[in-house]
Length: 244
Image 1 (spheres, rainbow, N blue to C red):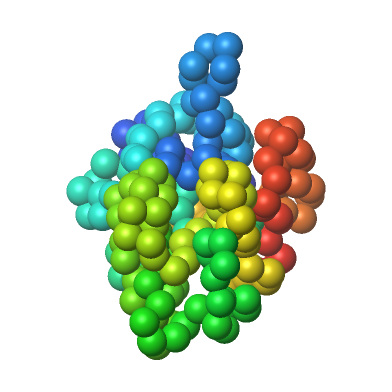
Image 2: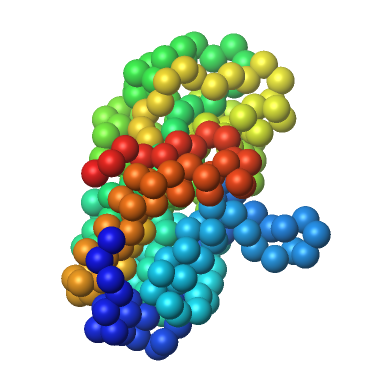
């Protein structure tokens, strides 16, 4: 990788500290240490490595939903953000290629006539999902007939699905496995409607920083570091993204 010049460090960490925005609403990428209660996980390990290479301390800027993280880019409160790369977010955020992928599919209730991913996009089908998540943005572009019903949290999505007898929940496969355990007879559909591309973003005007981050992501994938971070955190349902 290219050396970190003082100019590059000043662009990526203008306060002298790397302010890293993390979505704590994604349990695959973040967690709390059961012993200390401190945050840990794939996202934390990745920004710690980035801070080490830049030679600056890391401050975590936490959010409970990806949409809030994306909105805050124009407020100047974070320098890098770990979030799903989606075209709707690219107006203000320069994204790297994905560092990992998370499979997204549907959960349907017992007795559902929906059996394939394609079955779900039908008139009259109502899909519960986390509003402004990466897969919500994807489905908003691609679903032609079904109705998307967004909620602000995973719990609210599940409760709405049950209370209103909706037809499907769209979500990350690993999260839906937990939901399925609470719904006897429910099942996850085979395959996926998308794989969320988890990337690192920075404010779009930081062009040199964006180039460095792209190289950083390709390096951690190529050297096996990304795979080791996933393994060390014991996370299932995610995979290292292909080289850009």
